[in-house]
Image (cartoon, rainbow, N blue to C red; front, side, top):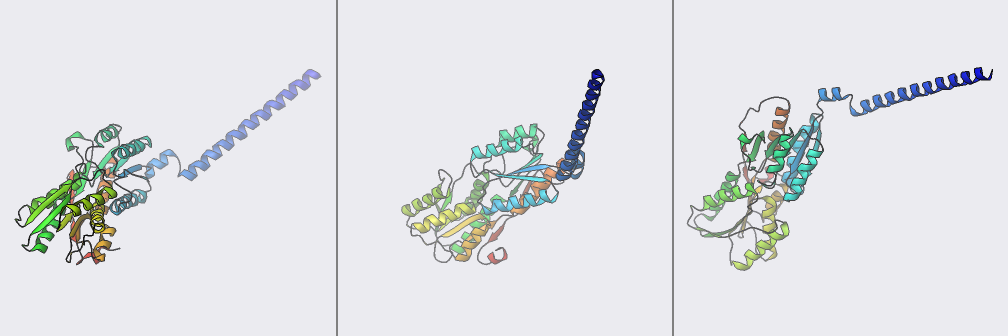
Length: 341
């Protein structure tokens, strides 16, 4: 009898354990189903609906031009139901490389690169491309050839033309009178260097315009840029014009000159020229102390670069040149209200 009871108890316990396992398995399956519903379905369904993660590195998250670039990137990616990751290099090569490493570690499918430096990210981008990540570059022309197969495209503003536009405005304002110029040197930034070249090449043809000095701030910060402008003010009795090559740089130069007692104005003061077309520049133009800027189109730069990544991810072919130039527009007090937000 005792033996029978023992067998019976064992059978009951076994059934209980089996029932418990069955309930636990059912609950686990239920949890998995709920997680799938919360995350948008199974992996296969996610793949069908997109499921890409696209990264973007911008030059500086305090620059309104870069913010507009990032906003357009996110608009496109998130509009497709995909995940957008935006990281800022903040004009630092080491931070730039860390951004690329972080995106690779996150397993991104594509990268849209707005680099502050033409050479610093090259090796890291080669590594990313070898991992199968689709990469496009925008804004700054990187030191990478099409034949290398690292970038699917490069999209930049007509930076040389931006310098030409500002120089032509200066030539017109001087109308043959003598003038002097100071300008930025920023060797690490291809875009700024190209803008300065366009500016200098244009005024070189004018016998009445003399270049006083080109200077590279060290480090490239607003404080250092202001200090450079203050040093110019202490060296030269008169500076007719300053070309900063970028909106934040030009504004810093303007602030430095004003701190040194130099009047900046298109009407009887030092002419300040920039490139970007940021809302900060427009505010300075409206205030009357900033002469003009060559307006870039950051949303268009971001649109082309981001769509190129998607084209290649989708197995398509890009239907434009590997290197695309986007037009710039000269803005001063005559048309600034057309662009103020």
